[in-house]
Length: 68
Image 1: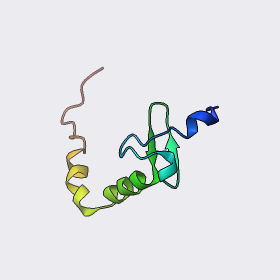
Image 2 (image 1 turned 90 degrees about the vertical axis):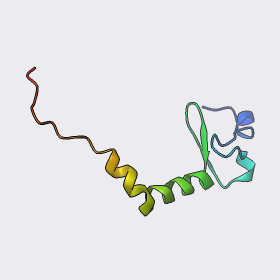
Image 3 (image 1 turned 90 degrees about the horizontal axis):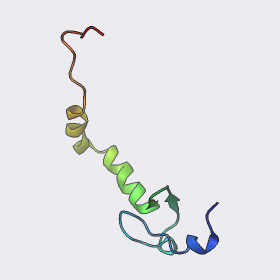
């Protein structure tokens, strides 16, 4: 369990805001993300501009299945 003294020094790994400057902070193993950056990321994922990148990440069909 994290030490309470360290909770005040957490900073968002994306925007650099401290935990006292945001509503909440999600803490991971090697970094943190604030609610503001999380909201921006969510909006990006749901935007129409992201459709191009979604289509580029589809795997190519295999024409001939290799034998094991």
